[in-house]
Image (spheres, rainbow, N blue to C red):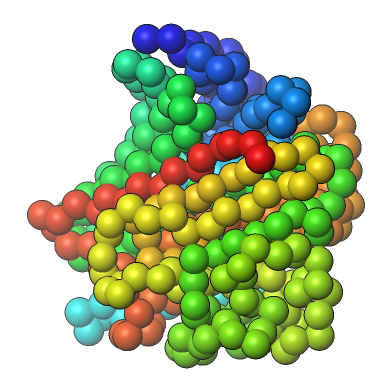
Length: 357
């Protein structure tokens, strides 16, 4: 057991609830920091090709900013990550009205989703890895969702420089669930510059186009001939700046890609994405059991947020690669199902693998 786990106070919420920060460090010096508020990744320190370490995750230095200003930096998003049209869905003939928090839609679990909860924490340590298990029980009717949802998320940092995230949940009534982590990364280093020259590869031949409110139209459209074609690695900048109607709708990249699975219900672990920074040599690979991945290019960062390093975050200063079931799946019957019933267990796994080139 070569890694270490340390814990320190991170402040208190406005309601007076104590928040802790857990610091996971592996044998190579890679360090991941997680706070119990939102199960949030506050810092991920990895080396460049010359062995120089930097924090590549955007975040804040205090609880108050996470409570009042965060655009979902590094948090667990749920009960339903991404958007649900008109903030409602029908399950077993019953319509459930959810909290509206994104125009006319529901986004990332509602007004007080999983990102705004203080989770119970338990450390874990094994051969060549250190971890943190976080648990939150969401009551029946929370933000309009049916059923009591008992959720556990386990973060594990390995000596192979993998950050593994395992999501599990059970329910006492039929419900829908879609969990992910909303980390914002910049492989140059947090707050240093934009991500336009990052090179992205996505293991996806199709994506889900959206309407003006960023709800999928239902089409699984080919990426060929569009700015959404990342089947060969290429820089982000040209597509992000293009006039393609879908780029205009999302103010840049903010879309779900359909991963190349012959069967979208298959949960075999597969590589979904690889993104690299040519300047530093840092590489992030994303592996997942999920059918989709959302690529977001930090379109709504506007220079008003000051990060943990004291720097302003501007548009396209970071990217997110969120593994997931598709947005609005409960309202799109041909999308892979997100229904969870009593006696079943929701379980997905995603790995962020950090290397250099």
